[in-house]
Amino acid sequence: MSNVRTLDEVVTASLGTRRLTMLLIATFAALALLLAIAGVYGVLEYSIARRTSEMGIRIALGAPHRTVLGLVVLQGMRPVLAGTAAGLVGAYGLSQLMSSLLFGIQPHDPITYAAVAAMLVAVAMAACYVPARRVLRVDPAVALRAE
Image (tube, rainbow, N blue to C red; front, side):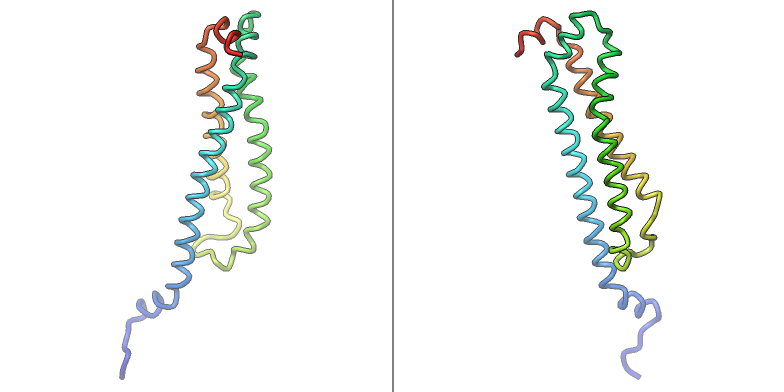
C-alpha cells in the first residue's frame, strides 16, 4: 500500500481550495467593510462640518442645542438607513450567487446581515453625533463669520 493517509488528511486536502477561497473572500470582505465604515464616517463628518453656519444661525435664533443636534442626526441618518436597506436587499439577492463558495454558513444568514447592518448604522450614528457636538460647541458669532 502506498500513499496511506488518515481520513482527516483526505478531507483537509479535498477542502483546501475551498477554504483558501473563503479565506480570501473573508479577508477582502473585511477590508471592504473597513473602507465602507471609513467612507460613511468621512462623508457624514464633512457634510455636517459644512453646516456650521446653519447651526450657528439656528443657535443664534434661540434653538436649543438638543433640537439642533436631533435635526442634524436625523438628516444625516436618513440616507444611511436608505442605503443600508438597499444594501441588505442587494446582498440578500446576490448571496445565492456566492452560495457555492460559502463554507460553514448559509447564504441567507440573518445574524450576519444584522451584524453588518448594525455596525454600519452605529458608525453612521457616531459620524453624525460626534461632529455635530463639536460644531455645537462653537460660538454662534464665530460660526456666522466662518463663511
